Image (cartoon, helix red, strand yellow):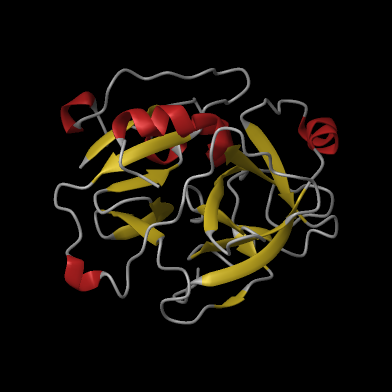
Length: 234
């Protein structure tokens, strides 16, 4: 597997328990979210990802930080901003594309165009196998949350850039939790019903805490970069 990406220094998210995790969700049905991927390392699940083509996945850059993944494993030069934790995105190329016979179980999610704007109040879905509370789950979980106004997002965290946005509920009853990082925030188009990878689970303070929504990587800002490596992606 080859990994490409913008890699921010996100150690503080681990050390201060700031990794998002799914809280307040419900069980999904088999095949309901066919682009959802669970990433494993030495047999243990640790992050999520999204299928965007037969051989490419999108995840969070901070999922690939650490001594276990070195340039010898396909890692290019690291790019990061240690002050504001920006550019939390990674592209993963599978060593073997998934076969056509798996098409009834695996389907890619569409990428939003660079012109796409996530609007405050839009309802989207977060999915993942992460923990259900701050204290894991074998069944894929889903939770509907709302895009938060960018000004409010910035006032909450202070380090929000144009490549980040917040989503959640003011009550904090639905959120990502440990193990969900890198997974999708999926939003459905009102027009044609297509699902778009609007966000990537990136970071946040705690799990489902009131007035502390999850922070997501704004995928539309990376559309040209993704198309550079995956020109055939939708």
